[in-house]
Image (cartoon, rainbow, N blue to C red; front, side, top):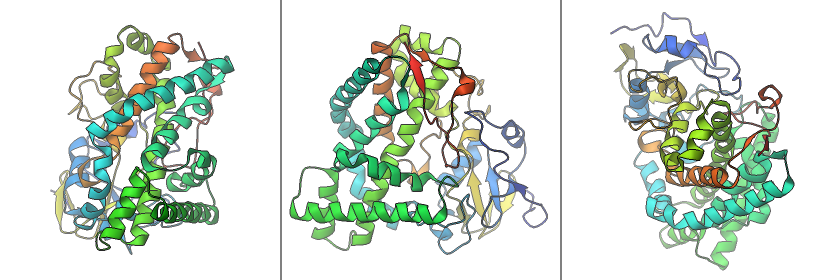
Amino acid sequence: MTDTSQATIPQRYPFNAPVRLDLDARYAELREQPLVRVQLPYGEPAWLATRHADVKTVLGDPRFSRAASVGRDEPRNTPRQQETGILSMDPPEHTRLRRLVAKAFTARRVEELRPRTRAVADELVDGLLAAGPPADLVAHLATPLPIRVICDLLGVPVSDQDRFHTWSEAIVSTTSLEPELAQQYVDNLLAYMGGLVARRRVEPTDDLLSAMVRARDDNADRLTEEELVTLAAGLLAAGHETTVTQIPNMVYVLLTTPGAWDTLRDRPELVPVAVEELMRFIPLGATAAFPRYATEDVELGGVLVRAGEPVVVNIAAANRDDAVFADADRLDLTRQVNPHLGFGHGVHHCVGAQLARMELRVVLETLLDRAPGLRLAVPVEELTWKSGLLVRGLVAMPVAW
């Protein structure tokens, strides 16, 4: 075990700007080493974990705390330190809030949503096909579908989608928005959700937001008003932003990997396995975020992380660890053993993972059935990628069929 926390000069991180869905070759080199010290654009230096085992430990071991980041100059990619609500909590406070919403995202509840989601997908693909090639997959399908699903679940008017989808960018922005505008968007989102909460008190309906309001009003010790509004706003934003991005990412990888789309078209029963493999293979995160702080001295990856030191993880690097995944840099749509960390791990494992899985499967199944000849309508060099966000994704994706 080595103690190099004070002696090592931190490397600048991220190593370079995210290019398409390419993963920096340096991660493969780093997995052969102990943890490394890095300096994000803002905040104090941190350890970077890239191995699957180390990343899993940081995300799952209670000796690494998110709550300890509060009040610290935490490593981050944006000049502002954003209040992240439940994402900055440890148990038991985290457990108290998560328990209130977890029942809405169980496998059983998600399965009940599948027929409605399939109907929405068919309707949106109708519009895509009617628009005629080239048509933008992002605008016609990838953006509206997750928004409509989370709106149905939460009880948010889908007619407001243009407003809250715009404001939600503040949740995943690093440099795409000026700090003042990002804060304005956050304030707008919270004010909007506060208005819906007030409306549900007067006119309760059968949705998650009404259930959360009842939980708050029946027992104020379970949920403060501020927690209620922040949690609901976070669910609305996180409940669609990453899936909006991941749908075109998955289609892009399938269309640009030789034989991949044809494989699923000929064997649609592979879609559930393929979604898991795409979650592993695609480096969705553009950088590291949400550092954990060691609450005591911890040996990790052969390095002594001292109490009070932050650690950031790169999930994409961990998902390419050859010690866990055979031929890890190859897309294998039949991979059966796949303990990927695409939805995180530990107490902060994505509460909406089952919902996202269902949406991704339904979208791919619908496209394979309705547009089996799907292809990119422009050369890959002409595609425009988002920048200044925590996630990688396409601005637009013109397709033909």
